[in-house]
Length: 113
Length: 110
Image 1: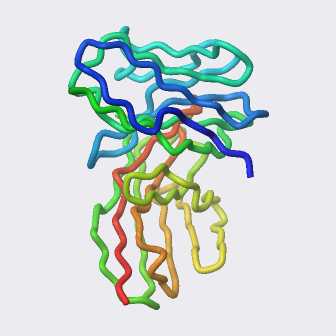
Image 2: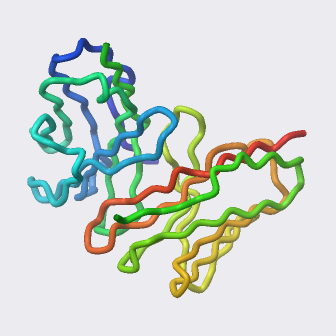
């Protein structure tokens, strides 16, 4: 069964450092998303991406965040200067049709020290 | 603010019990509704989509009441493997993003 894959599974970084979280969405999907989940809290939407541009972003997705689809398979989330409060699970998701079922990757646990 | 509200639980039930979860959502423009389950420190996994007519998948039954903006999930004959957090999820109306509830934790005991 096709799946969304994310790397790394766990990223530890120092405050102020840049991190790039990587995702390979399901191959024939067209819509890509990043969500985050702070420990003990709900899953929160960050950004959606379609046709090589951002479709929608939440208030969490400020200037420190950026997304990119550098080639035909990868979808990345970059945090330029990490803060302690960026520590969370980051989930990538994709779907083949707008408003359809979104499939989630296993997530990257980001720990900012 | 677009929100999804759920009873956080935990629901502690014996094997074989029937358990019901409820959820309300605030965005009347939402068009798609789902129940996802999430195991500890894992990703959300789709359990089932929810349709206005109600739908059933084995031991799981989901209902949607658009007028009341209310979604429910019924689990019959609970199994130990049903222990997880159940997430009520709606789409954000005109946007494709999903809005998650905080989840209801279920613990099924032998």
